[in-house]
Amino acid sequence: MIGRLNHVAIAVPDLDAAVSVYRDTLGATVSEAVDQPDHGVTTVFVELPNTKIELLYPLGTNSPIAKFLERNAAGGIHHLCYEVDDIHAARDKLKAQGMRVLGDGEPKIGAHGKPVLFLHPKDFMGTLVEIEQV
Amino acid sequence: MIGRLNHVAIAVPDLDAAVSVYRDTLGATVSEAVDQPDHGVTTVFVELPNTKIELLYPLGTNSPIAKFLERNAAGGIHHLCYEVDDIHAARDKLKAQGMRVLGDGEPKIGAHGKPVLFLHPKDFMGTLVEIEQV
Image (cartoon, one colour):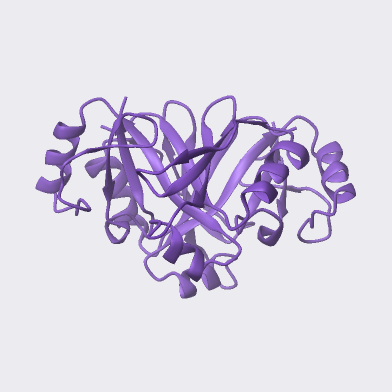
């Protein structure tokens, strides 16, 4: 069912510092920062040859990553995103196997303009999993 | 400097359960479990089209992931591994920029038979980073 690893998301407490580490220290290609007010984050993409690292920085009040950064002051890996062909079929198959889909279970348009759902980390070995229809 | 994301490593408290989630629930191709006594882990690789997920389960006493699993009972993402062309050149460049290399700073042969080094998570936004010469 799952296809490519679309991205690894890392929540960071200092976006400029994180960009510098990935661009200057690790020598990777890094996108401009983009505010995503609908998602409560500012995102920067680190473009690797085979996948992306998504740097997430809180935007506005009630950012969905604010609590994560309270618990992980230095930052940390926030979620993994796997690609699926059909997000409704994937959701129904996962739910039939007892996996918990977060929110109301209806796909939302994610930060990349594609339908996404998040799955409960307790059902995936402590990993918050995003599935994205590509 | 960094190239492909070689793998995402996830430490798991129950390897059979983790294999079942990735193989049966998520429908991915999963390798046989391999004991790596030199590294204190049993590994299973989830083969995605563009990268791998490495499931890590403690092997023997003093497994390097035992403490991580004490802190993260459900499991969790343990490290990211980036490929480099020349691990000595990468190490020297990182050290010159103040990044901390773990251990004695000399590359070890990792679980894939290639030279690896680990970098301090505090220098990489809370992410334990492995670099592997490919």
